[in-house]
Amino acid sequence: MLKRIRAKLTRILNAPGVVTPSRTLIPAGVPAAAAKREPAPVVVYFERDRNQRLIERVRELLESKQIPFRALDISGDAATLAFIIREAKCEDEDLPIVFVAGTPVGGFNELVDWDVSGKLKTAVFGPSGP
Picture (spheres, rainbow, N blue to C red):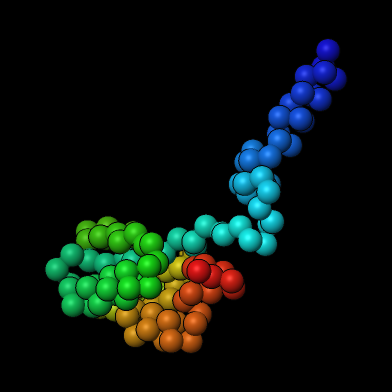
């Protein structure tokens, strides 16, 4: 009986369109190379009422490139601020700081450098990108 259950479970898990931790969802009939990958997470850490102009410029750049991002206000969160400063090797005056897939990019100027060099598109969408 256990063998039948295991065989049925294996058939279900190997069916087209089933997502398991080791597999990604690729519709049946679409070659794996043609399937688009999910964009890498982009997070912008900022403090409310500090460097508003830079926050807007970062937002405008990411939106113009159609890069989905999450903006997190870390005002009053000393632990998160300490983490950002440590990981991005910056000062608290340097906020907003952008992270792509957990990798610190830096502030607005560094984000522009990544964009101009093509590194931002590759980091977010992969080498084939949209």
